[in-house]
Length: 243
Image (cartoon, rainbow, N blue to C red; front, side, top):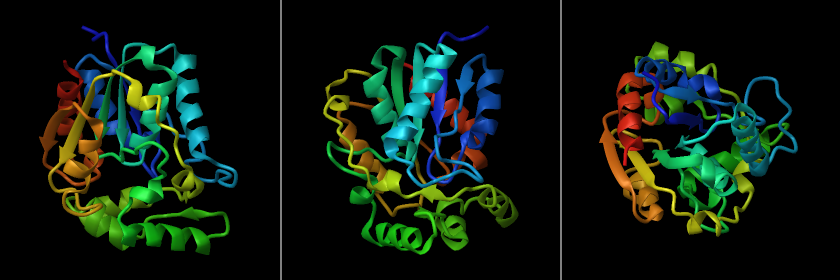
């Protein structure tokens, strides 16, 4: 039996829609519809110069409109949290709930670099400045030890090798979020207990506390649970989507 609600899964930095494949298979098996578009400027061999946060947002809104999607559970992972905030502003009538998966939650007139830990923000800036096209890719050692430390090294490396450089301008754009913070769309936050990406307490309660009233769920796993625990994550997303 097909469930009436549809999941729209928005990936984080360096990823593409492909990151959700394992989760989508499990959601489909449980009778849900699920979509995972790739953000503009994300993917191998793309032109990154001129890419902005707004272009990422527009690419998701265009996908929603072209697919005729309604009654959405809008999910944002990591950087994707900032994208779903802006998407919600544009098509609020199509969204039943927003789910933040260890995601960045910006306040009005902030950019991504404003809220990253100072050491990580400095690394992002350095790597982008050293690149020929203002992009940055997470170094293998940080990925292995802090983002996907709960996977066998061979698995972690195979995923890391699929990542694409992130257009850094998306981290610099200040976001006007006044409209977002006026919306009454229900929100959930999924906290991964072994997430070491940004340090203790960063995602919860650090980011989650910015949501106001929200439904909190917890699960085991690292920052990259869509690869390491896809079945558990699918179950948590379903739980997070309920009223």
